[in-house]
Length: 99
Image 1 (cartoon, rainbow, N blue to C red):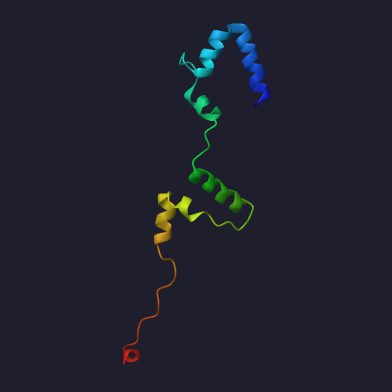
Image 2 (image 1 turned 120 degrees about the vertical axis):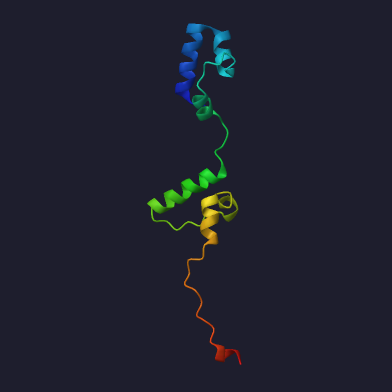
């Protein structure tokens, strides 16, 4: 998919041979960095990570954004913040109003 990586792959294949190149692609030789394998994987990031990025981007650009409550329920900090009532307490009940 990325032309530059294809060129590097072709060059390494020409230098070290097809069997070794294939072994590296599959990481059967165990020499490819786990971090690199993770970064190059096609697996999408977790939804909570994407949602947090969207929140930060919206803040930076001063855009109103309402995060998805289902996704944000996975975040312990967000869930705890929603449990805390930040509104002022209701006015006290007058005993005379109960009669």
